[in-house]
Every structure is written in structure tokens, then in C-alpha cells.
Amino acid sequence: MKLNELIKSFEVFLTNEEEELLETLGNQTKPLSSFTEHDQVIINNLIRKSVVSKIMLDKRSVMVTKNDF
Image (cartoon, rainbow, N blue to C red; front, side, top):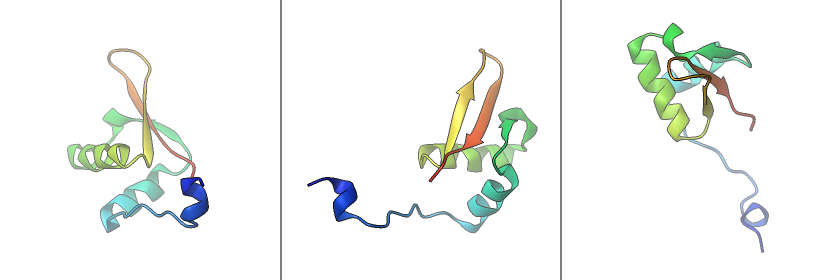
């Protein structure tokens, strides 16, 4: 039996700050440097939770995008 069959609804807990930042990100791909330091910490938390993906274009530029649920 697969895990998906056992767990019908799987939700990741998000804080209010994380939800607000995720809404501002929308379905766009934005550079990580365009966010404030505080927002970058929140985005890194979302990356750890696999809600946001980090895309490395080269050694200097990092883009972030929202994952599909």
C-alpha cells in the first residue's frame, strides 16, 4: 500500500507570514535578491518545507518559484 493511499489530505503547516509571502510570490519566478533580508529568511523556511523551489541560474543569481500542490 502506498503512502498516498493512506493519507488522503496532506497539508504543510504555514505561518501567517509565510502565507502572505507565498501570496505575493504568486505563480511568478522572482530573484531572491529582490526580497528583504527578513523575507529571504522566510523564503528559506519555505524552501526547507518544499513549498518553494530555489533555481540556481549561475553562481550569483538565484530565482525562487512556488511549487504546485
